[in-house]
Image (cartoon, rainbow, N blue to C red; front, side, top):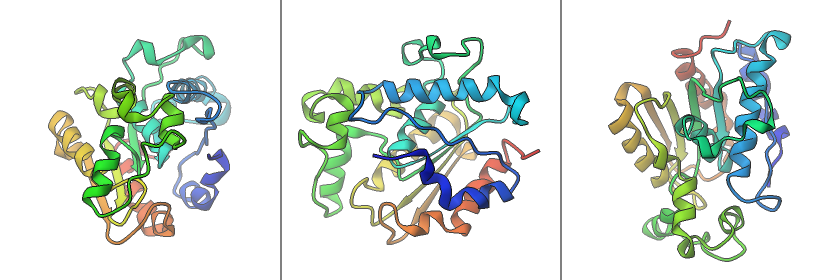
Amino acid sequence: MGDKSMVEPVLDYILDKGYAVASVNYRLANEACFPAQLLDAKAAVRWIKANAPTYGFNREAVAAWGVSAGSTFAALLGTSANVKELEDLSMGNPNESSHVKAVVDIIGPMDLLQMNSQLLQLGYEPIHDTSDSGISKLIGGQPTKFPERCQAINPITYLTTDCPPFYIQHGTADHIVPFLQSVNFTKALIDIIGQEKVMLNLLENVDHFDSEHNSPGNIQKALDFLDRYIKPS
């Protein structure tokens, strides 16, 4: 589920800080399996860069920002930029790069095969390996039956020293996407790109899609991080 209009609760705040925002729709899991969603997101980045002069964007300062499932694809924009099989240039603007300069990852699934075991570890009910789960629809089958498909969608699979800086936020009471997803992803990123390029913000006793994620204070923390790498013009 989801629509690009979901950015509206934080849109004005981000705009007021001097950033332009392009909110992207991509094919949902009931429309197409992975990698369709990532192909759409990369096509959107290429379009943004190609049309930057028209809209006054800084084409050299594009960041990806995602929430929940959108965070998986935002993170993949950051980690899979050089993976040719995860890009379809026939979707437009083939001369542009889909590379991004930074990533904001909020409550994102980063290792699909570990989701249920981490929920159990934290005392929550496992929900992601049923045939009708969102993840099963996304990969075209139950995760435990198709581990290679899970591996292909996990941002951690594509980590290299070329990855951009990451700001990561998660609530410790998240009963849908366990916060250990972000903890482990943070550790893996630090090992590859260094501590100075990664920030993890854990929100105590905050659940999935809690309003606290959209509070001005937390949005400002993400923007402060972005300020280091893509200063608003």
